[in-house]
Image (cartoon, rainbow, N blue to C red; front, side, top):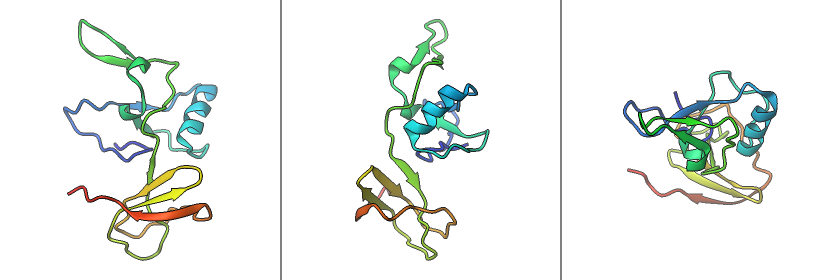
Length: 130
């Protein structure tokens, strides 16, 4: 499983938790708007806990477990990581700065996903993570 927004992978034993999109249409719409995601996403799509505040969780002191509150709306680390729509291999990560937001691309393979390039004002090579 990976986060639909930042592509954070599930790692067993990690403190990062994953949360399904609400079934309630009003809450679901708020999540989709906050994440700038299309209205149709797979049922199994999840967001990781990096996108919520501490106040968005109910913590149970006896077990230490936490549950996402039904009123929670993602608001943290809202940079969406997408793959480049270019039909060639980039081999590097790039940060696309647009007037609306920052889109990070870690494309190293061909992809059919599209990035709207009409509002891109600059392209910067992302810092290496390795």
